[in-house]
Length: 207
Image 1 (tube, rainbow, N blue to C red):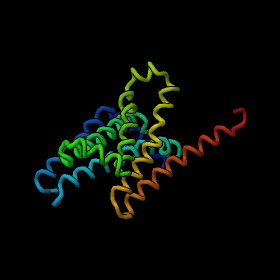
Image 2 (image 1 turned 90 degrees about the vertical axis):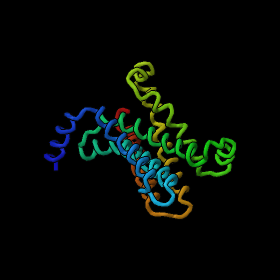
Image 3 (image 1 turned 60 degrees about the vertical axis):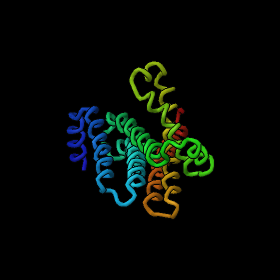
């Protein structure tokens, strides 16, 4: 197992982080094309909207999994974390854009009413708004200006954002489906590892 991880880490070191932006962008035009050509069923706008949101949540989960993967399996994906986080924001923004433009046809009064009246939309909007400062500061300049400690503190916003995203995914189904609940369970499990590490750090001798 260790040899496999070492081989993977050696191979990943040769992969430039920017290539992940290209790779993760490719599904977006493909999914729009698929929706426009009848490849996403009888409700293509709804299917496209959900697919983008689900991919965004998967990337958030992948970003949360990077530290546990490094700690438990020694698999080092740290160089890709920024690209994964930024692309998670892009997918969630596209998900929201589809709702605003294609689903709601820019009926802002109706949208505003739905944001207040429908809790799953309210939760989704809060999660999206929380992602904006993370996306804006996901660059070296912001890291230098803010300082590492403040930057890390701000980016811990991803924890409540992930939970809100998982809850939004469950609620948007309007029936109890297994997959969204699995997503939320994985998010909570990943966050539990951080609570465990934080507790260990606080109780460690000399701390």
